[in-house]
Amino acid sequence: MSEHKLTMDADSVLQSLGNYGRFQILVFLCLCFIYMRGAWPVLGSIFLGGVPDYSCKKLADVNKTVTYGACDVTVSIDGQNTTESCPNGWRYGDEFEETIVTQWDLVCDRDYLNELSTTIYMVGNTIGATFLTPLSDKFGRKKTILTLLWIQAAIGIGAAFANTYALFTALRFFVGMLNMPIALSTYVMVTEFFPSNFRSYPSVAVNCSWSIGIMVLATFGYFLRDWQTLQLVITIPNLLTIFFYWFIPESLPWLIAKKKYKEAEKVTKWASKINGISFPKHLFEEAERESEISSEKELHSSEVLVESDHKQAYTFLDLFKTPVIRRYTIITFYLWFANSISYFGLLFATPTLHGNQFLNLGISGAVEIPAQIVCVIAINLLGRRKPLIFFLLLCGIMNIVTIFIPETTDDGTDLKPLLITLAMIGKFGITGSYSVTYLYGSEIFPTVIRNHAVGIASLFENVGGIVAPFIVYGATSLKELPLVVFGVLTIVGGILIFFLPETHKRPLPETIEEVEKMTKEVVYDKTIYHQAMSTQLSGIGEQNTRL
Image 1 (cartoon, rainbow, N blue to C red):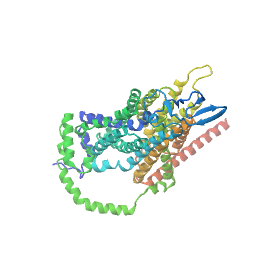
Image 2: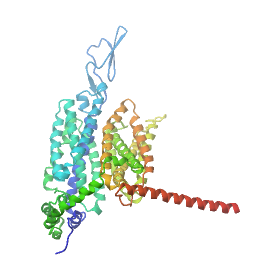
Image 3: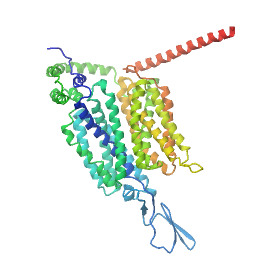
Image 4: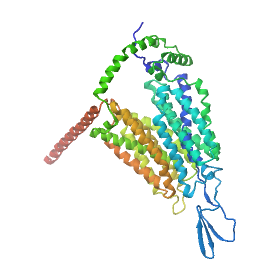
C-alpha cells in the first residue's frame, strides 16, 4: 500500500475530480444564483424607497389665494400670508404605484428617514458579517447558507406586510444581517469547489453573477412599481433554494479539514459519478488510520503550539508597531473605506442621475462585467499597483469632471447622455478598484497579522457602506455633493497607492521583520539605480564638455 500524507490533501481530491466537470458546473450555477439574488436586498431600497414628484394636496376652501409648494402651503387672507406644512398631506406623481415614501409620507422634514432605513440595513450587514459569518466555519458552508437563506425569506416576507415604518426598518435590519454572511460564505464555497490553480475564473464569474443580479433588479423595479410586490419578488426566490439541498453538497475542503472523511468520501463518489470518472479510492484508503495517527500526536502538537504562542502572540496593535506596517495599515484601511463608500454611494445615487433610473441601474450593473474581466487581465499582466492606481483615478476624475458639465449647452444640446456615460465609466473604475483592493489587502501584510489586518479593514469597508446613504442624501440640498466626495476620496486613494509596494509574483511575507527587510532592499536597490544613472549622466556630461 502506498504511503500518504499525515493529513488528507483537499486539493488533491478536487484535482482528481477534474477542473470544470459537470459536477463543478452544477454546483457553481446553484451558488451563482444564491450570490446573484444577494444584490436584491442591498439595492432593493432604491426602488422600495423610490421618491416620485410630490406637492401639497389642495385645500378644500378655494375662496383663498393659495400657493402650493412641495413642502408647504401659503395662504393669503387680506394681504396677510400664512405658511404651514401641507395640512392635507401630499399628492404624488405616477412614477410609482406605492413606495415606503408615499405610504408613510417620508418627504420634506421626514425625508431623511428613507436614507436612515438604508443605513440601518447596512448596519445589519456589518453585524452579520462580524458575528454570523464564522458560523460557516463551525457548522459547515451548506447548512449555514441554506438555513440563513430560509430565515431571511421568512423575515423578508414579513417586511412586505409591515404596516409601520419602524417595523419595516427593523425587519430590513435583520434581512441585512443575514445577507452578508450568506454572500461571504457562498463566495468561499465557490472557491472551495475548484482546485487551487483553477479558482481565478470561477471567482470572477461569481462576481459577474452579482452584476447580473443588479440588472435583474432594475428589470423588477421597472415592471413592479408597488413596494410590497417588489419586496415579495426579491424575497421568495430564497425559497427556491430548498431544492438546492439535494444539489449542493457540503464543501469538500471543509469536510476534510474537520476530518469528516466518511462524508467527504460520499461527496467525492457522487461527484465522480456525475463527472463520469473513476472514484479516487486511494485518497480515502488510509483516511481513518491517518485520523487516528493525528489524534495520537494531537497532545504533543498542542504543547508545541502553546510554547510557540508564548514566544510570540500577535494582536491588532502590531499593525501599528513599525513604520512600514503602520503605513500599509493606514493606507489599506483608507482604501477599503473609500472603495466601499464610493461603490455603494454610486449605486444608491442612481435615482439622482440624469435620465431613467431603471435603465441607469441596469447599465450600472452591466459595466461591472467588463470591469471584472479587465481587472483579471490587468492584475496578471501589470501587477496590482498600476491597475489599482488607474481604476481609482479613473473613478475620481470621471466624478469630478461630471460636476463641470451642464445638462444642456447654451444652444440647447442635451448633454445628459454624456453625463450618464461619464458616471458609468466612473462605476467601471470603482468596480475594478474594489476587486484589486481585496486581493492587494490580503497580499501586502505578513501572515502573522494578515487576519487582523483584513478583519479590521472589512470593518472600515462596512463603515463606508453605512455612511454612503447619507452622502447620497446630501444631494437633496447640494446635488454635486456625492460626486465631489466620491471623486476626492478615490483620487486621494490613487495617490496613496504610490506609497505601497508591488506584490505581484512575490512570495507572501511571513513576519513583520520580512516586510521591513523587503522594503529596505527595495529602497536600497532604487538608491543604487539612481547613483548609477547619475554617474552615467555625469560621464556623458564630461564627454560633451570635451567635445
